[in-house]
Length: 429
Image (cartoon, rainbow, N blue to C red; front, side):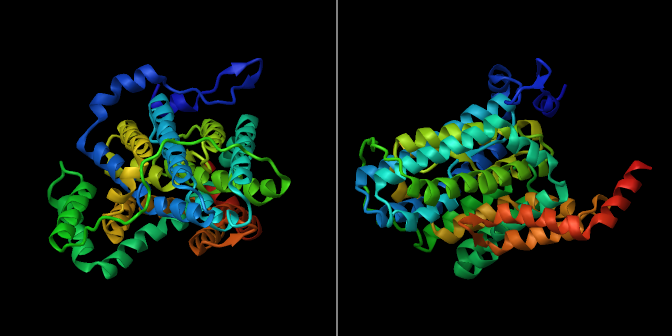
């Protein structure tokens, strides 16, 4: 039985399937980990960690500043989401031998920039915990798994393409912002891809980019005023207003944005992701992070895309090693967040964005191919899902990936029925 077959198997208990998908187990995953710790898997995991520890950290710091948090509260927030996010990778990746990466909700942090001006931090912490409870209950119900498996694959792939296309266009934007640094990184990526098969192109891009940044004097220590402090406990206050304004949108973002993206990219790469387990652990992560003053620790969409891509190695069965590397680095960043933030942020932002975009090229290509394959139908719905996800729209505080799936399915039901019937007929002959 293959790894993916094992992950797809369910245990029948009393005529019902287990809610949490069975995996290959930690012993097998850890036993085979050393041989999968290749230069490619280590570099992909490192690139994903650098991406997650740079720009997104600024969003969290901005939200903390907007809410008037103390230095220790801010460090506690960073510790909660980074340490627990890394722990999620270390729990799921070896157990399922799939590159499932944990982090936190980046759009969730963004909505808190405004929310923390309306609610005190005790109310926000109560809302964080309630959001985790919502996600946990949805995971235990098995509803999310059934919905994701019911969604037409072309629409899911189109949503992934639309949600991640900003990383592709971000490479072009980054070249314009820092032509020498990013241009050298891009050239290194394609030269190594073409001529040096044994070396990871994304690692070459990072090394050359950092070297060029050092030569041009573009590496500057970030002036983030956070000293090291131990994590602190904030007493939660539970209110209906905070539940409606923070908990509900945050839970929807975790499921409809981060988890949906991660599930989609894993499907793009040929995995059968443990959707219910991913949802349950995101709920547990939300509760635990809330107790430490963080908004949510959950499955990461873009970072899962990096670690599951071909940049993490040719052997798909071994790419989970990239997620393990990422988990170790992420957790370590959380422990020393007060010191590590300025160091990570010293790297040029355009370089970080460009390297992340280069790592996702393979994922984007596969997503587009599967979304608009004429043999599979749903092309109109896939197009709607693509443009909605690309628009980065927010409606009712819910981000674009959720609406892309919903509107894509609706458009396909209205406009693709003849094509779907034809594709089904052809597939059955």
